[in-house]
Length: 128
Image 1 (spheres, rainbow, N blue to C red):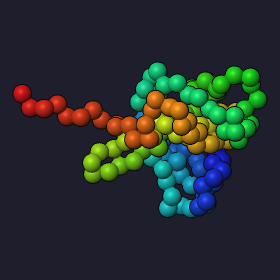
Image 2: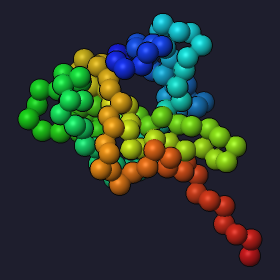
Image 3: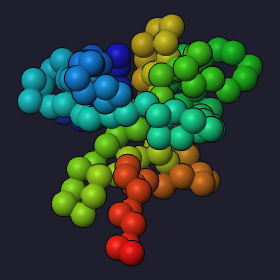
């Protein structure tokens, strides 16, 4: 899959392992040390509503007169950030991959109800 816009590398291959499911690693084909941790957005939010802007639809070479459907037309992955303060996923700007031609874009949606730092795990419950 091609991700234009990344200056270091633009071509990635998804790598999955049953032991790590549902995580999808995006491995750079140009830079072997570059790998992103991602997770399908529908795993995080089964009701996720994808809105792709016109310029991103052009990059995806999307020709239909409707928005692409997650799981049917496109693979939609949230990039995961791992920090000491907790792991988060970027649902505001997911990676969207056209399943027909494998072109991809990070589809930023500024008017989104989602955050670029959605918590992956619910906060621990206070002790009783």
